[in-house]
Amino acid sequence: MKQNWRFWLPFVVGFSLYFCPTPAGLENNQWHYFAIFAAVIVGLVVESMPVAAVGLIGLTLAAISGFIEKDPNKALRWALSGYSESTVWLIVGAFIFSIGYRKSGLGRRIALHLVKAMGKKTIGLAYAVTLADASIAPATPSNTARSGGTIYPIVSNIPHIYGSEPGPTAKKIGTYIMWCAFAATAVTSSMFLTALAPNIAALGIAKKTIGLDIQWSQWFFGFAPLGILLLILVPLLGYLVCKPEIKESPEVPAWALGELQAMGSLSRNEKTMSVLVILAMLLWITGSNPDITLPFLGSNFINPTMVVFVIISLMLLLNVITFDDIVSEKGAWEVFFYFTSLLTLASGLNEIGFIKWLATGVSQHLDGISPTIATLLLVSLFFWIHYGFSSITSHAAAVLPVVLAVGQGIPGIDMTVLTCLCLYSLGLMGVISPFATGPAPLYYGSGYIGKTDFWKFGLIFGMVFFLGLIGIIYPWLVFLR
Image 1 (cartoon, rainbow, N blue to C red):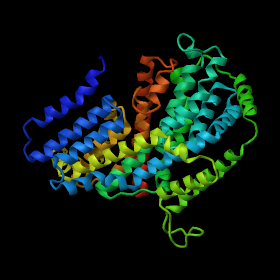
Image 2: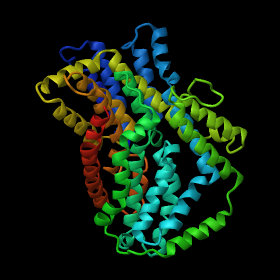
Image 3: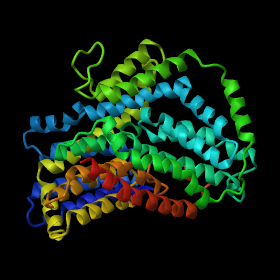
Image 4: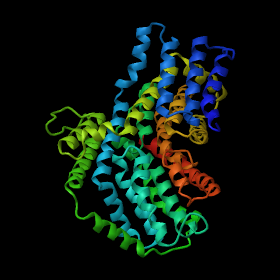
């Protein structure tokens, strides 16, 4: 009964907006469509139902309402249009690709090797965890699967060795290691296009809104100056903020060695998966460039989405995974309905002219402000408003079109730079709260990071990440232009 408010709140918000007087400059259908969209976003934020169900119900309601298309057949085609989007299939395919990492055991082995090599000192252990995340991030589009499914199970075993348990002894080493693992995944999620599913979804929104498309290598090199620096700083800053009581950890390498010995030598599937990971990386980096000729492809390049399907096909042929694994990957199919619905609903706001109306109104308040100040204000808004969201995807779907549309209405703003700053912030903003990104509730619920500490650490790291975005990436992008 206590959770009933979560179920009813989207309806309250939707009906309240629906029956409010239509603002000047809008037609009734535009305002009523926005009421449906707002209700969907609220449903996603408060998690009134499974996110896929919220998106599907909202999309169905928007289609049958006639607010986008009055003709039923055209409305159906609009509702189904998102299912043909390559970005949606890239997300689903990449989720399935991550099954191979998990099922083969390759991800766990990589993490254990890094712990064995660098875990003698506490700070070295934090670097090992950070590098473990970074090493599998390019091929793992779900930071929940990557950090929660691969990194967390290993990291959670470490504090027990030192008598560091949730509660009074957490600060011995547990708080520090857990926080560094969580903060590191926020960095790696921004560092690689394929390290966070909402990156791809947001790029799809940007492509529809302003026609911007960014290749895998362009994304990486655009963020690398800050990303590499933050991978170095996260364990150091965590050392200062979390203040671990235990500075040395000589037992951990021995524990990791024991785990590796228990795993035995590289299995056939691990070797196969290693080759496929390397192949995927090469194709993502080079195959999406039409100027590069690939073997067996002549002068044609290979689309990033097709790369995933190629790897999945090879995984099936080589028995790394089975088709039953694909069918049973519940998260992938939830994402399929979730992202499709959000992308279609978000594009609908633009199609009916709501975004243009909103952007025009906001732009009037920014009239006369320099392009630089306007860019900083818009990026600040985009980053810190995430305190109100429990999903990075719903945040991107709701806020990114508005920010981009406002930017387009301000003379002199470099839209490529503004868009990239917003896209690069998606992973970073996941550090700010206990519900800001998928793995956050897992680390929050571990008991090693206190409630007050989580919010405090999140604010400190969020400020550092944001200042790095503005102070390093902004001038770097301007230089590249």
